Length: 326
Image (cartoon, rainbow, N blue to C red):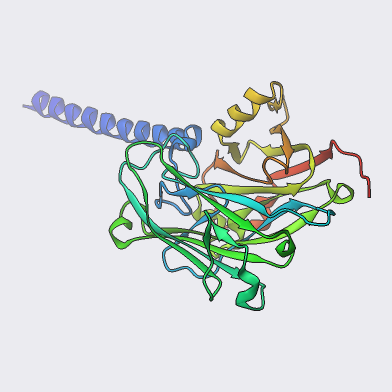
């Protein structure tokens, strides 16, 4: 009888240790997947709020948000007698802002609305348009019922055109608001940004800078699984981005895109050094704005993480390839 009882106890103890071992194994595997495959999560703005809805110059916000971050649109200075109109393409996609391979399986229907700021009267709106659609007397151009077909990569392009005379004074509030039927497809997100115009000359060409775009929002960094990093500027040269791999991993798709165009642009961490860098060729003539993503390589720390602290994880330098001419 004692032998049977002892055998039964041993069986229970074996099962208990096996169960505990499985729990530890699963926990370890889960954290490894978090730190090593973060780029596959495709989160949007906060933990668990992924949305496959993005743009080349707009950021995601919760539906109903009315305050947005700023983005400069830099145009080259024209000193001719009759400067030609200038334009900028706003492109909206049905993909994650963090991973171009994550395509929304559902259709997205939305309204694009662009409102002019900084001009005094409706007479000043002449020459402003979105895809040749003029602005109305209130300085607004609304394009409803826009659709991105689900299940495949889709995009819509909107050419914002303005007279050269408006550069430096005109700015634009741009929103892409999903229709109610599409709220589920985009996790109740919208796209928006304040676009303001500026000009540059050769003498001021060497101006490129980077910043965490999410820091302008009310969320704290510990609430984010990944970060948007905005690079903007004018002129041409090499923008070198350096980051601490202890905390962050650059979006591998963006890194591959740059190294394909510029072999040797990436510098990996070395023994005793946790920093990596990427030398990005930039030219405002072709593109004056980049929105890149960083993913976490360690779990968030709500106690110590501030935007000031996170900003220390990424630094940059810029070397102009142009000589100033005044």
